[in-house]
Length: 102
Image (cartoon, rainbow, N blue to C red; front, top):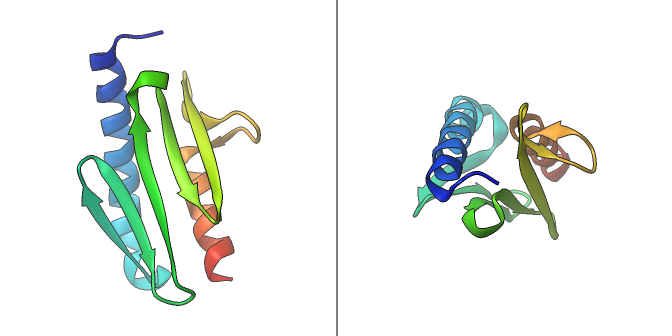
């Protein structure tokens, strides 16, 4: 396990990169992105919903609460990855948004 400072740097960088990707697709995606206290919120009007993306420092994961499910991504050499599917943070969030708005 890495120390807390190293984890926070990696998590902050990953969330910042995701935030920029989401901002770029906000208009086309029918959602809004908000950032509060280190967490990202993806808010949908139609159909109504909200995703919460937040680092969980004690367990060194990024957690996504979306579509009534919790997704826990581990930090690997490839970045933050959902071990069950092998999806990285950005592609996973993109898929979840597409499923929500379909």
